[in-house]
Image 1 (tube, rainbow, N blue to C red):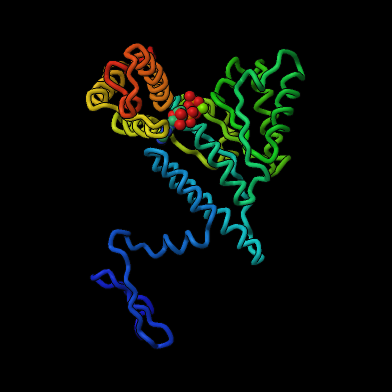
Image 2: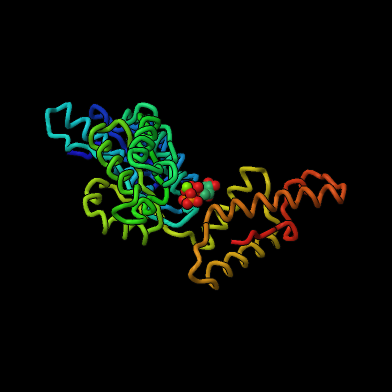
Length: 315
Ligand SMILES: Nc1ncnc2c1ncn2[C@@H]1O[C@H](COP(=O)(O)OP(=O)(O)OP(=O)(O)O)[C@@H](O)[C@H]1O
Ligand SMILES: [Mg+2]
């Protein structure tokens, strides 16, 4: 029997419909990936999140895992419909990475995705850190933590620098916060998703002293530091969004500077995307001051960041 769909070198596909051969012209500029097109037409939430993720530079591991999570939730629903075991879906996660590597951005994106997929009813993000969870006297911590969980119901509770909850050991109220979180993660089923985030090394240590936690967070996503090229791409994207561009010299100056701070310093943590955002915000203000003093407001000048405008904040 003839294949129903065949791909030919000249960019045409042959389709056999009711025994009749039809030729369909396919554009050569679009890579022919039939699966992708099919998947997108059937899976609107996936298409939407892929579009949003494509705005993010790098993060290949994260992008792959997010698609897998989508497939997992989707297939589990179908399995349930067909009376098969759906394998109790635990979506609590751990994010490991340095500051400014996009953890909060991704958490927010996941909220939107899970809402679209009905895995969460609201999809909002509540960001918290140690001080929001830990109280000052016995019972205070459990109360504070419960209040936060209440706020996060239907969405995501994102605990940044989660390892700091283990600070101070057994007697510290941080432990009470962890216990309260764990209790509610399990009691409330899928009413909220808990994401614990922090530096990789500290999070690994945190897990090693709380061995019961590892299995409660089946999804672990690593957020690697950006390369200089990726940081440049992030800078250009952020500027473009604000309708600015870097002059050639400014681009060289920024690249040089990033190379220096990334590779000549050691031991200190570099804040990746957040650093780039700070550079841009400072430089946009410096450019405004320069233009104002020069009393010069031509359209392309208004849009161009010159190398003299670039200001590098202390890290
Ligand atoms: N891959 C990326 N592409 C484009 N912009 C990015 C990317 N990663 C981070 N950014 C930008 O960098 C900034 C910091 O990102 P975000 O706040 O998500 O990082 P974080 O890991 O949560 O950092 P922190 O530890 O400081 O909370 C944001 O403005 C974000 O838009
Ligand atoms: Mg953050």
